[in-house]
Length: 462
Image (tube, rainbow, N blue to C red; front, side, top):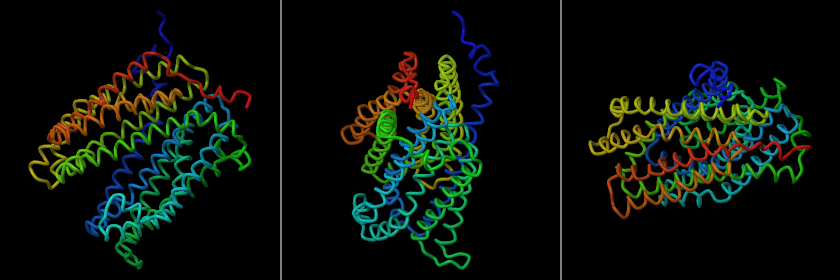
């Protein structure tokens, strides 16, 4: 059988493949790493105010977490179309999809803001009944809600820029915003440089300032460069109900996918919370350490979505299939390497945490389990977030994620914790059966070849 010309140079030797892949992936990796590091600094500063403040900010941010899941799904859904339209140089429809995304983001942001302003105490009370936490959390939420509209607009532009291959601008602007957030946190929380010491309200104000700066700079640079996303207002709103309906056939599964993942994460948090303080501490440390190794994976999945989406949009189906095979192999290799690095580095990283011997031993056991199956987790993320979404197969991505999480991962975790009353490391291990099943289903979907959908065809003649 004749090999595809896109595989003739070999998986690890084709510069024409690796140059765009690295150009797309590396800025996303750097952006995520800087974001994780500065957010940790942000948490440390709020932590100096005391446990009540930490709890208040953390609980108020649960509301933002739900909002963010909706935004990520919306923005990623729009980027599926933008990546494929970019492959055909269809500027008109890129701008129309951008308009759909921005309009939807404004509606969602406004809805969350109105509900938050009207019922701040009730939102905090869903998670905590401590009067002090409710008071501080409500105060924080009322202020930080002012950033939601800017956040919504920024998310849509960031995903759109990545979809057309521009990952440097989002990285640069987000880094500026994160540094800005840390600086104003320091100034407004503790009353430095002549500013009043506002405590939790200062943290909320710093977030608002950072989001306004981020969105303003991002949009200003987009229009200053006069690129494909610098659309006049008339072109952004040049769509009708039929166009929106066709777009949402793909956008809704992506939104449901991210919401499904987000809600399952909240359920896991509740389960571990009910297992006790030591279980919570164990899982928090596990997530803190493993997330540092995940930044590479999200960069690769972003690159996969863009490159495969561009190829399908351009009608290069064989190239898309070849890229999917390469990203699968790369994901496997990267997963093995990262898993080994995690296993070797984790004992030293655990020295930074002042915890009991029981928590340390449970944490180390879980990390070794995660390291062992890390290549499966990496493969799953690259397949679902990168290949399937880039291929326009958002429905299958949602079904794979939803089925394995809610019919395997969540039930096994609940049974392990509350029925079998297993120790936390075995409960976590049971939950990982989700990843094993998901990996097999992802492999089956890729081998079927039915994941390739040119979503631009829906708008032919539009």
